[in-house]
Length: 378
Image (tube, rainbow, N blue to C red; front, side):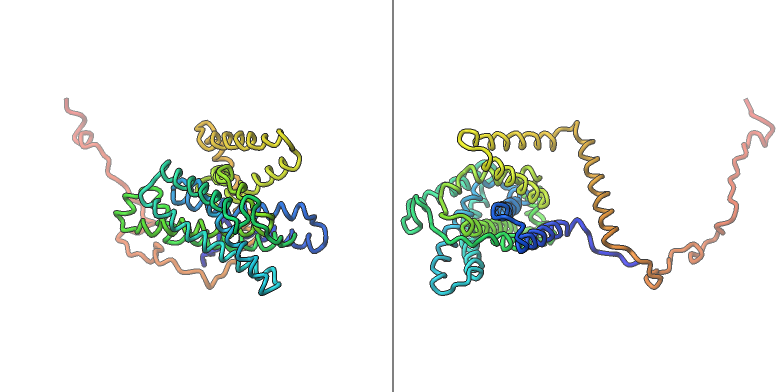
């Protein structure tokens, strides 16, 4: 029978985000979706972009980066600054948003290339220090530049409640790029560098090219997320892109699982929702409890992922997930029997020449020679 190449696990992210986009869009046009929920969805969207793009560096390449908020900062400031001047030539908010996202992403990609150069020689804690310093230097520069508003921040024009629709479409585009990159030969080369860089070099993989590629792609989408944030919140403040926010993005990656795009989506959604609820309901000194909750969740997930005693539980959850996916796949795709696709088995027994017929009774002579000679001789 013909082999069906559709695999639900390869499309589950598209289906989930696409359904969520359709449902929320219908709710908005019906007037059911309030502004607070729309703002939350926008936050979730750019958080997913940040988490998945950082997972490309940390999870798939295996390099520790603590400056992802710095790339977001560069894209947000420069992209939104360019958008302010575009409004002098056009009144289309959609056109301004799209062009500013491209500008912010490209500028952030340039900085990603610059940061990727030290990654060719630095590893582990040393690379983490460089990326951390980059993030702090960038936001300090924007803080002291009056052109970008200085300490008061860069004033931008808010897009409106419908911004979450554009943000979710960007998420779908980002997922398409990331998943096709990871499943291609380039993705296999990237994971080979993560597993053993020396062996990857020995096999002829261009390590320099792929490290720079990963940092450029990751920074590009971080810059786009920064532009979305700049059209969501005004003014754009340097204090938002702090070291703590880079750690928060890293927590999303760790909680979702290193090298898991689906996990990054789920973790980014949960953490953003928790942050939104805590920020809304907690005020004053109680707002600091959200960091405690982050720490507790992170510790619990690390214990769950690394404790040998919990391996049976993880195996059961994995089996249950596979059963659910197989059942859903069976409901979505019903395999039909097509006699024309049946190919005769050229290896059938009646086609293979043999000296012995398969229905013949075979026997072995196991008679004891001593018994034939009259018994055992002692």
